[in-house]
Image (cartoon, rainbow, N blue to C red; front, side):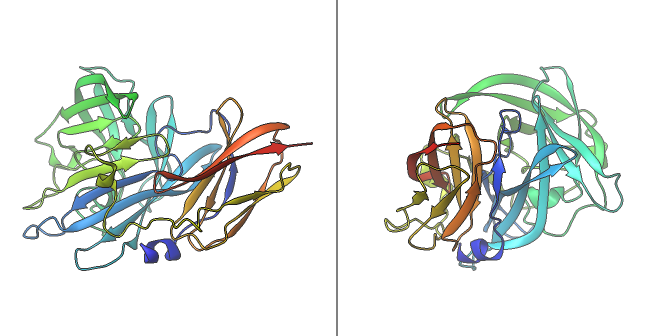
Length: 326
């Protein structure tokens, strides 16, 4: 995954509040799919979607999901031009549209407040095909599609990795209207659509011989994908060496800022999170692949004992504690 990490990874430090933390698409989250390209091709493409950065739009803290793909014959994941900006509030997930032909703004993608018998009135981004089960980087349409009406046939709580999440089953309300129709879908809270790609599926997109399938999802708190964590690791995944795990956070005690240092460049991006004694995350920063040093301001942080953790590819690679003085 060397090309992936070198070409596009953002290093940033963000102050978090309880309201700013998203359940859907938190920083560092990853989705993996196996997808096809053409009707007569087998399912040989791997698709990686990852939340690489965050952006504030109209006071809303949004996650920026970037797409990478790897053909069977290629050794590494390569970046594509596709990205999806998402925001969540009160169980509703929105995407932000910036295409030329649609009014700029937030459009509903999922609503986990719905019960069986309700109608999901949602929209699909112009690049929905790029985030579906076909490995298309060209876009299926010129603008946002919708509203698209799907009937919620069931809405239940399911246990995933020790967490109880809302899962919805939906079906097209008007299946004969192909252009404004989504397929039968399973949509899981925190994860999204697992049957038609992250942004859902369109009835008028022909899947062909390769139907594609969801492989796994993981973030710092949740792993979904088979019975083995290895389901989330494609052959090109990179592990940290013991030397790279020797993470230094200084000074300790700290007053105005912290410095995160590694003795060797990390092979892939990592997320550094600072937790209060209550366990609530209060600061977060992204360390890009190849980056060995990062300065993190502590402005606005109350004095006290804090605990930090570094995670990469959904796994912990280091942890410790630090005292903040004022």
